[in-house]
Length: 269
Figure 1 (spheres, rainbow, N blue to C red):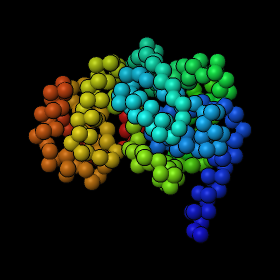
Figure 2 (cartoon, rainbow, N blue to C red):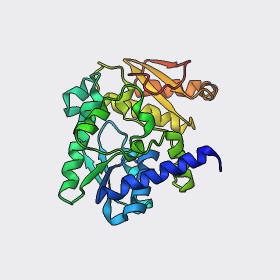
Figure 3 (cartoon, one colour):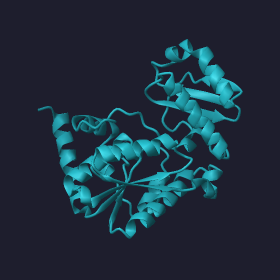
Figure 4 (cartoon, helix red, strand yellow):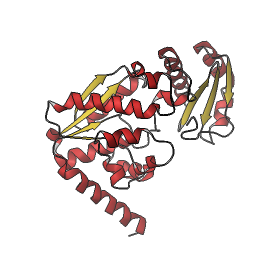
């Protein structure tokens, strides 16, 4: 057995050990591969009666994501609770401050705590993984302050390893591209409005409809839209250049650009 396989097995065992003492566990559930795999393991270790998936719906996430999260939770056999939250009512989120993610995460997990506390769920966890410790991550400070556990990170599981384990577990979304909140599409200090968020969501949904796959971001600079994609995708985007330009202008953008550097996680940090 290869050393990488042995290391992954050890991390998987460590994840079980972290989950076992959690009692009744509530998971902040986005429906992405990280939270889905954690939900799968929590149900396996604790039993479905001791696990609740909680999705916070807001304008920072496309409505389809909440619907998708509910579907995935159901497929995994978990109870699912969706809670609406007006995150733009948080001033630091609306003005898109440098620490926006801290205030956003704090509001989200306070809401989760209020929603599950009366039902007797004693532990709140999220799908933060080991790779999330790099870069500008002010949201992690909020998790620590509120006592939220991150079992995947604690078990030192990175994104690629989680995808591998999720694939082995036959999770339907094991290869789903990451989908962080839509606020990450705006430069720090740019006011975030519901209208602007809807334009971003419409732009990215349109590109997905045109079969643009993999990691993709539509970054917004006023009237200009900047498309970041994986290195292999620009040719596919240029093949559909006229359609993309027309549709993005119909959404409300004046200028359309393709970023030659391609997709970079956290490029708006």
